[in-house]
Each structure stands twice: as C-alpha cells, then as structure tokens.
Image (cartoon, rainbow, N blue to C red; front, side, top):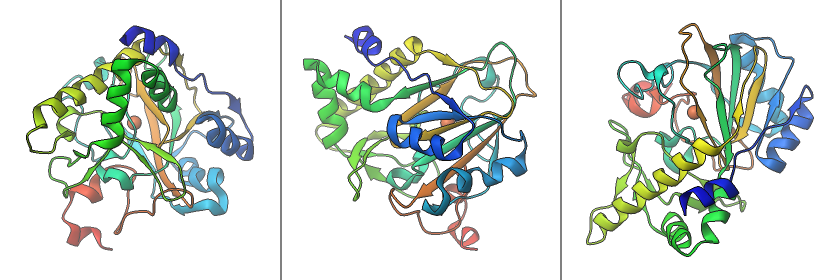
Amino acid sequence: MLDAIAAIAAGLEPSRTDDPTHAAELVAGVGACILTGLEPSQSSAATLAATLLGDRLRAGPPPVEVREGGDKDPKIRVDGAHEVPLPLHTDGFTYGLDGPDTMVLLCERPSEGDGASTVVDAYRVLDALAADPGGAELVRFMCDVEVDLTAPGAPPRRGTLVSTTPSGRRQVIVVALRDHIRAVPGPLARAHEHCIDQVAEVFESVRTWAPRVHLAAGEALCADNYRVVHSRDAYHDLDRRFWRIWAWSDDGRPPPEGRLASDVRYVTEDPAAAGG
Ligand SMILES: [Fe+2]
C-alpha cells in the first residue's frame, strides 16, 4: 500500500518565477514555488514575507538562520544532524494549530551536490490514502482523532492532524519529531499511537519517492505550510546557509498571542519573557 500511495502522491517540482505576485499565485494554487533573483542575505530574507504576501501579511517575525533544526530549535538529532535526512514535516508544529500558514526558505549558500529539498503536496497524499481502504482509515484518524501536540517544554496543545480553518482551508500537520506527538491518554491510546506511527511511515515512504529540489543562492522556496510538507536530504557542507521565514496571512488562523519567531523560542521560553 505505502509504495503505491507514495507513487500516486509523488512530490511537487515547484515552478520558478522572479515575480513575487506570480509566486503568491503559485503558492495559493499549487502549494509551492521557487522565487528567484533574490539577494542571498539576512536582510533580503527579512523582507520576503511582505514581498510575498503584501497587505495580506498579519504577522511576519524576523528570519532565522537554519542550522540543525533552527536557531533556537531543539536539535533534530544531537550530533551529525546534517548527515541524515530530515523527515517530511510542516513547520511551526510547536505552535499547534496556530502555526504559520506560510513558510519561506531562502538559500544563501547551498551545500553543493547534496542537501536537496523535497516538497510534497500533503493534500495529494491524503487523497491517495483516501482511495485505499486501509489508507482511508488512516485519513479518518488524521481528521477525527485529537492528538497531543505538546512539544517538550512548551504549553499544552491538542488538535487533529487534519483540520479546517474558519476560512475553509484544510490544514495538515506533520511533525518531524516523534516525541512532539502522542496519543491522548484513554482506552484507545495504544491504537492511536499505532496510527501516529503509520502516518510517519506513509510520509517517509513518500519522501523516498519524491523528486529532489536543489535551491541555488538567491532562490527561496515559498510554501503553503497548511498544505505542503518539506524535508531536506543529508549534506556535507557545514557552511550551508539558509534563512527561514514563518508568516501568518489574513487567510490563516490568527497569529498566536505574544512575541513570535520563525522558530520555537517564544513557544518554549518563559511566557513572561516573551510578552514584549
Ligand atoms: Fe522545515
């Protein structure tokens, strides 16, 4: 089942454009694109949310340099994180359902020959799953069963992995870290833990099938973070440098209270320190 689903749901190969207006249309229409011709720098990254969303931008915290999991993010794996691929995921899952609906990743310096990104339309994965009897059951789990999305050290968060926003958008959450998701305690907890493992297995299978996307310096992956999951392959060059920007548009869920960031720092730090 998994390979068949993965083949049907094979990843996006995002179109390139140097026109921000067209980029926004592509993100809205197919979920992702690559915006080209950008200055490969932090200051350039700082303007990208506004460039892409214009007056639709409701919150756009400063860019964060992407290292092994982000500036202040927990390490995906303690050592040698760059030597293994990241699983497919949506960004900002530590915000729970209140995560950013837009994710931009600007390449300042690629790792030549490796470190490619994978971009997958999670809606297509869900549709492919729904067409398979076993898969349909998994989709029902993702849509109907509330799970515990509390990240270590963060405030409690619960929600379903697939939900619908007030404006009617379908929001998919796929976490990169298994310890950021667990079944809600109860008689079905064990079965739900199994479903959580199956979801991870499906997306890992999809990741292995999906085409690779190599971003060059001055190119930015722009994605609908409710719809598109992404990952990156292992890389060798520790000077690889990307900037990540999370943004909340006027068509997503409202930005969470408090000071925001393009990583988890204001979710996991003392709320009193985050109020400024
Ligand atoms: Fe990410």
